[in-house]
Length: 398
Image: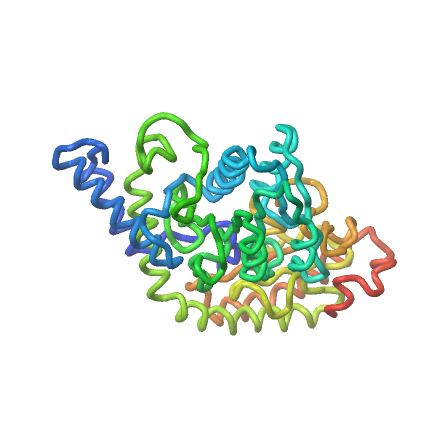
């Protein structure tokens, strides 16, 4: 049976060159980077080389990169670290309603700790309006955090404009760029970002390696206390092989990004075009301003998990919602935020392509997907369609 992996937004396979770069640091160069003898110094040198590569990928300075263990940790670090560092100035934070759970749940934690949080709405395509950001700012606002690209609907946000608004008001701006860094060009200078989160496994690096960019001069309270690692801002013995892998993956992403985009985008468009030919299959997210490998839909009459199971039975591996919420038996907050009714949001499915995806893969998908939809509709208990959907986000994109 043919097998096709279309869940690259969840994670990616490790690039062979990344694995080759990591292997020596499991056994040969095993020293603790804080040790002053040769094995430790080799490990320290490898970390600093990786820091340079990670910084180059987003046009930052190496000293502005703090290595972490995941995008979720970076997001927690950004919100908590800036909130507690700046609470003497104010205790108001602005985020959007379609942030990753690691942002939304951290924002809720901070609310319980006495901070006020404004959750901004989005339009039918999942885009934050910069005007809404400007209106939400108060004299107490100390942090704005808006995701760069949604892993669930693929929409790329107007982050540069929002960052400029933050800068003009003297407010620190963070963006969760986990889904975008390594997949599209990301420049912290042009995005006007003070902090930015990214993770290696999103661009063919290892899991367990990520980073938080913190602009030079920004004060941030550590999330993890202990030793002096990462300039005293993130304690704990460094995961040297993973960091080396992230550095190599960043190097490859910078080198191969446009080649990857040129390969993946036409395949994504072919997938979307054919999927939309199936009755009552509607695109979610922005039709144009979206990640180059991302296609997401809602399907009338069908529950998302059922689609995933039958697709997997045919060797097609995909997701329903984000990787952190696809097992939750409730409607996606992201889809609800763009106007999709709760019952319809249960029929969501997300396909994300990678550099190894081929045209044969997409042809197989285009042949299989309509058959699965037809089969599931035959046994669907629902007799009615999307009542009240006229003028909604999904209908508007039909």
